[in-house]
Length: 264
Ligand SMILES: [Fe+2]
Ligand SMILES: [Fe+2]
Image 1 (cartoon, rainbow, N blue to C red):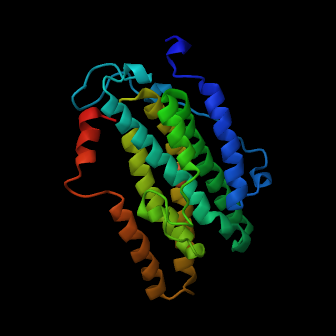
Image 2: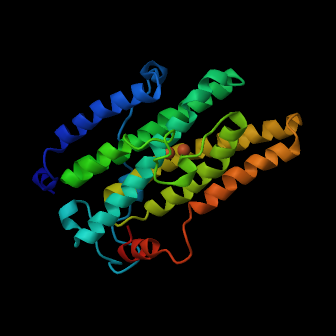
């Protein structure tokens, strides 16, 4: 596939976005020096992305690799929407968690939380890359919005990502329950008819399993210690399970129906 089919000057688009990203880090108080030698690499696993569309109206046809191969604008919009919602959650979670580093119970917990925040930024970075590279002006606009909405201001797309994470019990609940929902979402996107999106999911899923493990491990230690009263633990289970269930949407969601039809 000739590079000319990628829309516009995608390298320039993404580089401009990176400037916005750097400003965003400063704005939310994430010190870039905390990254150490961590790099925001773009990672694709093309082997697991699949060559043929797996279900829906286009089942059996080759997966789309470029915007112009996607047969309708409405399907492009649906793909852009999927990528935008995913990216939105990644940056939101860093805005929610960032302040916890100052009150980490142990050095181990601090390292785990920092690793999670680095990886969430990489996930958001990957989604912005897809938007800027494959979706022209529309993608560039949506990539910019990923850094404009803000969890502290309650303007992120999904409810769970506007809830404050006030302390480490909150954080462990969040990573246990909300990262689990994230895993389901990534798993669904791994079957996307848009191949670069499907191919992004393998590496993201690997990283997500560490986030889940951090939550489970933290909660296990809290419960074993027996210091925090059961009722209080239950209170935070309720807080996150309820917002987590909302993430699955309504039973009669038409966007879920179209997502199936288009296999996006
Ligand atoms: Fe993530
Ligand atoms: Fe995560």
